[in-house]
Amino acid sequence: MNGTTLNGARLSILNSRFEGVCRKMANTLLRTGRSGVLNRARDFSCCIVDARSELLSAADCLPIHVLSGPDLMVRSMLAFHPKLHAGDAFLHNSPYHGCSHAADHTILMPVIDGEGRHRFTVLAKAHQADIGNAVPTTYSASAVDVYAEGALIFPAVKVQDRGAVVEDIVRMCQMRIRVPDQWHGDFLAMLGAARIGVAEIERIAAEVGWDLLDAFAVQWLDYSEGRMERAIRGLEPGTGTATATHDPMSGTPAEGIRLNATVSVEPEAGRIHVDLSDNPDALPCGLNLSEACSRTAALTGVFNSIGQGVPRNGGSFRRVDIALREDSVAGIPRHPTSCSMATTNVADRLTAAVQLAFAATSDSLGMAEAGPNLPACKAVIIGHDTRVGRDFVNQMFLGATGGAATAWNDAWLTYGHVGNGGMGFIDSAEQDELLYPIEIVERRVLADTEGAGTHVGAGSLRVEYRATVSALTATYSADGAVNLPQGVHGGGEAGGAAQFHRDGEGVVTPLPASASVRLAPGEGIIAVTPGGGGYGDPKRRKPEKVASAVENMLLTPARARAVYGFDADSGT
Image (cartoon, rainbow, N blue to C red; front, side, top):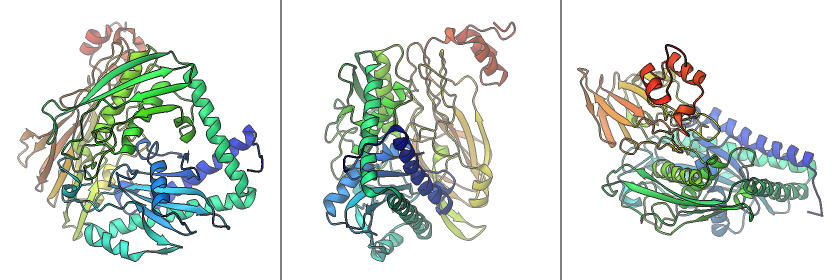
């Protein structure tokens, strides 16, 4: 580093430039991705890891993709490929070597200077609608192990050698994946995004020099660690333990999966400890977490609970100690444990346990429980579109609410779920109807389903869609029907999940929590998504906010009176 010390202005400018690199990569993926998962739902993340394998920049990323995982994947890349060259790139989706889950295909591209030294690594992670699973879905809740899951696993496999694509790997994927052209388009979009990231960092280095960029990386992460330390020193000391429970499904105990977290806040040391070791052993299903998702669920709960103002990067992460147990459903999995759904259901509940544990340490910390994933309006659909003579596989993102209240504000209505963090997009109904043989019949927030409180959680969303001219199969695994999102400090539970089938005659019947449903033309699915829990005593909610909810038909006068003590007729 040649003893270079950057002042605050230069740190801020270079941080903005690195964030700009991430955004350019993301814009490339959004505009060139072939699948609806990328070009409409924006289920991807682009980030930069430094030479010490710490997360440096992750602007506009989905939390579940980047808080932990990029660091672990880069370490795997370096272990498997100690000699790197400019123009190399690696495909990584192994949950046993740092990836979130098998459906999150990730391109890792090292940034190598003119002397052959590895300076940074750029990552483009893109969720895939189909990865060759035995069941045509990106998520497989019922897979007893990775073999039953059926996905191709790539532990940092070289797919570009000094600038030339390794076509052997491409052919392998095209023979296994049900929509080979769609996957190949997404693969090329990821490669393009990574190449842009490398080129942009090289451009910055040509302006200011590699040594200055090294100095920036070290000092920015140290500064972030200091910000995190100061934030923790401003908290109250305490220890709290909490539990959140995933609904029962195939492969789980009859009572569901109880996720436990203990949080200790140590202001004098400037540290937070999150103990996740007291959790069940890995289960014979696809709900187990990868190490990356276990760590990310904990970090998400921490940052959701302590408020804003701390950079989310490897520097601030140094101040959080996370205890995990090997071979646990929420720990470090052993091969061949299936982690097919690691980014969603159990991760959502584990974050909730951390947030609720924070709330147990203080009246002014923590967050209520957000609505868990994956409702049937986020199903993966597969079929043959007779309108154009084309097969299709895509995950729909027709909406979810799920936001939970905090100590300082109401919920974010379109939060989506914990791992999404409100960063993904909701599908355009019109675009989905043009591209697939479906009709979106209804999408609305249900009244009286919010998590009541001084600050309220989001209400439930009701979505109905149906097959039109062609049959299709929709696969989903919805949590939140039995164990409703919890409130804290007197806040109430939110509305729960429910899934229904509507036949061609209009008759509605309940569906199980997890299923693959065949829809003939004219048949449809109704999905109700969970809301989010409330924070604090509902009777302390400001009357004008209750009145606004009644006026906007999110709250009935009867519930306003019974729960909030508000008379809609008198306005008090």
